[in-house]
Each structure stands twice: as structure tokens, then as C-alpha cells.
Length: 124
Image 1: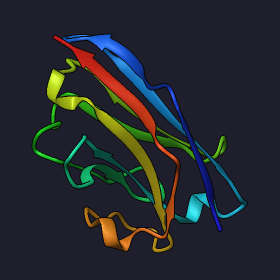
Image 2: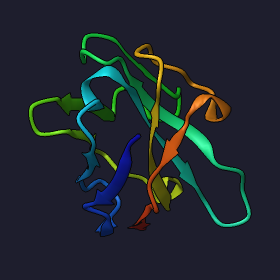
Image 3: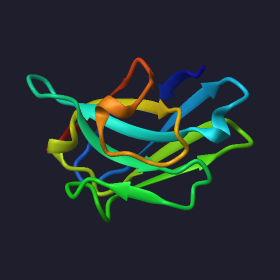
Image 4: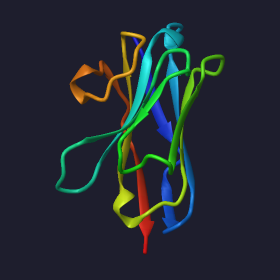
């Protein structure tokens, strides 16, 4: 099992950057694929980025491609989301998620573990 705790959210101006972190408990972190999702007020939770167990394969939503980078440090049981060139439409609660298979997925329903979320607000 994984327990996930996100950090690094906050208020930033458009064009700025933030780095989200997700710390995982459990000795099996390195065998799980991980993902980031986000949910804006009044909207469904949507896929942002995902990464394989070994960090060698990643996938991004079109809306963040070229601006966001997902990475992981298996020695530290942590996954990151570097967010650059932020836009007001990136404002949302960002959730870290883990899935038991080691290969990434864009599908929210294929994740077994979720964090509590961290708020990101981008002002114009």
C-alpha cells in the first residue's frame, strides 16, 4: 500500500513556476507507476501527467505538454511535478496518485492510491 502526501502548492502569478512534491510511504514505491491529476472548481478531476516505475517513460495532457515535467526519485520515495509558464487556467487542486501496475496510465480509474491534494492558484 501507498500513502501519499502532496506539498508545494501556493499562489503564483501567471508565467511563474511551482514545483509540487508527493512523498510516498511504503517500501514498494519503486514498483508503482505514478500520476498527477487536477480538479478545478465545478469540473471533473482530469489527467495531467504520469510516469513509469523507473522514470523512463512519461506522458502528458496536451494542455500542459512543454510546460510541465513529471519526475521521480525512487530512493527518496518522491514524485515531482515541475510547472513552468503557469496560466490562470492551471488553477486547481492537484492530486498525486499511484497505481499498482508499474506502467503509466492516463485514466483516473486505474489508480489505486490518492493523496489529499494541494491547491495551486495562478493569478492573472
